Length: 144
Figure 1 (tube, rainbow, N blue to C red):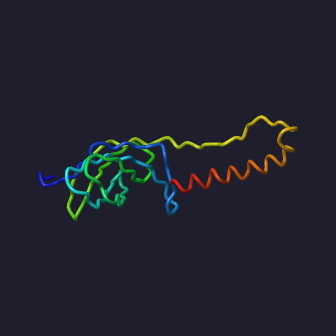
Figure 2: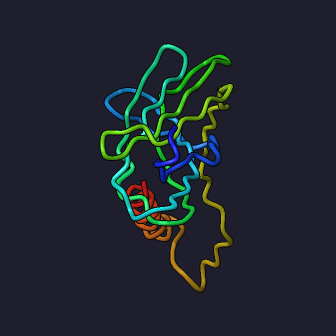
C-alpha cells in the first residue's frame, strides 16, 4: 500500500451471528476501518480458503469505524485475506488465520406466572402471547 492510501483495516472480529443468503450460510464479521481522509465509498473482498466474496461497505466516514460484512461459512481452520478497495484502488489488506465458529440454535420457551382470576383463561392468554412472539420475530427481521 502506498502512503496515498487513506483507509486501513485495524481489526477483524468474527461474530457468532450467521445469515442465510441465496441458500448459502454466511458468518457476520466486524471489520474496524480507519479513514484518515474524506468519506469514501468502499468495498471489501474476502478470500477464505477457496471461497471468495465481495461486499459493498458503503461510505466509510473519517475516523475509525466498525462495519459488519458477511463471509462464507467454513468448517475447518484456514487462511483468510481481507482486501479493502475504494475508487478502484486497493487501500488496505489484512491476512489472518480463520477458525470456524460454533453454530448455535436458540430456542425460546414461554414461561410466566398465570393468575386465572386476574387475566383470562390460559388458552386465551396464550393467543395473546402468540401475537407478542410474532412481533418479536418481526423486530428481529427488521434489524438483520
